[in-house]
Structures are given as C-alpha cells and as structure tokens.
Amino acid sequence: MAKDKIPLYELAKLAAPLAGEFMIESFGPYLERQSPHLHHAHRHVFYHLVCFTGGSGHHSIDFLRFPVEAGQIYFMPPGQVHSWSFEGRPEGYVINFSTDYLRAFLGDSSYLDRFTFFSGRAEDSVVRLAVREAGSGVREQVYGLLQQMLEQFAAGDGGDLMRVRLLELLLVVQGVASAGHGAHAIGQKQQVLVHFRQLIEQQYKELRLPVEYARLLHITPNHLNALCQELVGRPAGAVIRDRVLLEAKRLLTNADMTAAEIAYELNFQDNSYFSRFFKKYAGVTPEGFRKEWRIG
Image 1 (cartoon, rainbow, N blue to C red):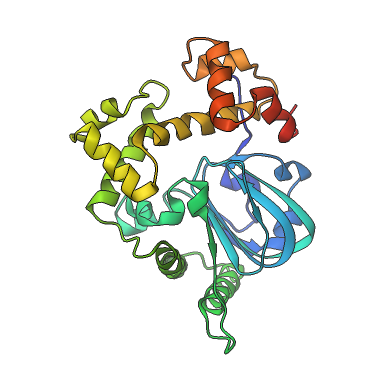
Image 2: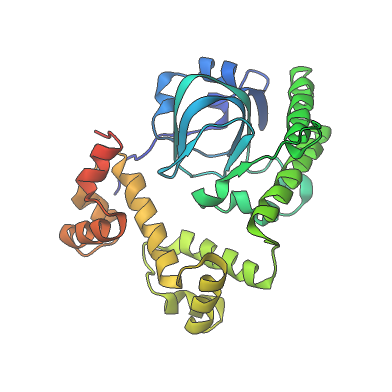
C-alpha cells in the first residue's frame, strides 16, 4: 500500500470563514492567512483559480513553471499539484469551489469538462487576458466580474447569482482560451480525446498500450493515434506515457517514498526499469528530479 503522498487540502481548511462550497478572496489576504507550507507542492480536492492583477515571481502547476504577471489567470481541477514562489506580495483574486458547486446547479456532471483550462494539462491551465488602451478589454471585464463576486461574497451572498457570475467568468475566459488555440471548439474528435484522457486517468497504472484504450473507445488504434497527432501533436502512446511520468513526479515529491516503492505503486516490473523510464522521458534521474525540486 502506498504511503501518503502530496498534501491534499479540503476547501474548509483553506476557506474564509463564510465559505461553504465556494469562496472568493483578495489574493494578498488569502496568502497571509495560510501557513507557509502552502508554498510547497500540494493539491486540492476542489477547483481552484487565481487571477493576478500584479506581482512577480513564479508558480508551478504539475511541475511546469509559469511567471507571475498581471492579467494572468490560472485554473486547476482537483488533483493537480502546484506551488508558489513569489517576490514580494502578489495582488489579485482567488476562487475555490467544490466539485458539486456548479455541476449540481447545472444538472450536468460533465459540464466543466468542456472548458479547456480544466483539462488537467498544465499547458492548458494558464490564460493571459488581453488589455486595450481604451480600458474595455477582456482583462477589465474579468477584473470587474471578480470584484463584483468579491463584494457579493463579502455581503454573505453565495447563492445562485454567484453561480451565474462564476459561470459567466468561465465562459468569458474560455473565449480567450479558444481564440488562443484557434477555434478549439469541443467537436466530436475533441470529445473522443476527452474520453481517452478520462480512461487514462482511471487506468494508467494497469493499461499502457494504445490498442487497449482504442478497444475501450471502440475505435482502431490507428484512428486513436491519428486523432492524438492532430489535436495534441503527439502519438497516443506518448499521451499515456505523459500521464505515467506525471504521476511519478508527483510521487517523488513525497520524500518518504523510495524509488522502489514508487516503481511498485506505478506497476513497473522493478526499480531499475522505472529509473530508466524516468531518465529517458524526464531527462533526469528520479534522484536528480528530487534535488531539482528541493524535495527531501
């Protein structure tokens, strides 16, 4: 059995006093209320987003580093790993909401899956909001929505109007993200890719071959491979491998787990095979990765 891995936080532990399934707060005060360990790698059981209006430094999502910049907004579904390293005090807004906060309201358990920034891929998680000289760009629109939500929440109102405004925020930012991907609408091919990634999430420890997933998707391996090449620029086998490698990195953030224990957890036949796999695809040994991220 695997030991406890990366710290996993519930909404109640990080929320402001008024929060239940939802909270919004100015980012500076939010940081001040949290203990310093939140700057180290951790993850949540809830949805999390931060919009920076100022500040510097960097933050990481699943071990990809992003610079902190005004007008940047990042989104994380439950389970992703992140950490912060700020220079001075950043400014902005933070929103945390439970997995059921919007889904129950909309009556669609898969509704949030249509947003590209909730794909679970760190590359899709960060969106940069444009600003216009006239002061009427999408950045100002998002800032205005967030400020309205902050004031509404401070007044003790987290009801359906808040849900509507949160949904409006997500849709506005999705418009920016879609434009950045060039007509990245959710079509039939994208739906297959989403289902493929959901299957990987469920079974990556046991199933490693594209043919196994193609069988579950009721398509041919060639079709699956062509679809992945078209939509993400990588073959299906690499998409599966990326998920295994990501989990290996997450497990390596637990200083108490040995490489042999991680190899067993991920269903590798032995530690040496795991180490070769990690070095080949991460470009560094497991021990080197731990040193790079100052773990242990």
